[in-house]
Length: 70
Image 1 (cartoon, one colour):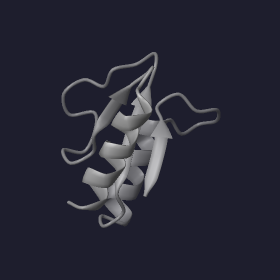
Image 2 (cartoon, helix red, strand yellow):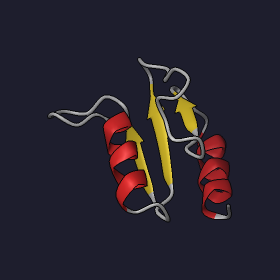
Image 3 (cartoon, rainbow, N blue to C red):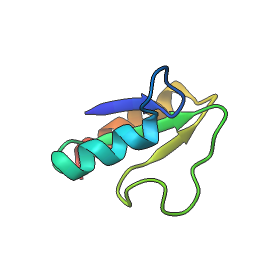
Image 4 (cartoon, helix red, strand yellow):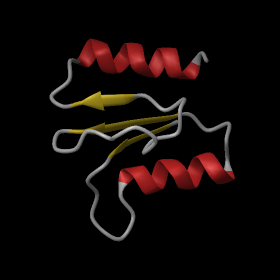
């Protein structure tokens, strides 16, 4: 599982990271988060959940659980 923020240092942001893994290793589960950016339609693969910050710990746990059980 990959849990990534959209805002990351370097040349690859979390949206590019999600697309990279979805294209190359589709079985890997991904959750994307951000406190600054809300992805627009089509910016994330359809099965990748987005969590806006600040988030509740229970929401993170439920999201990981749900994503891993899909």
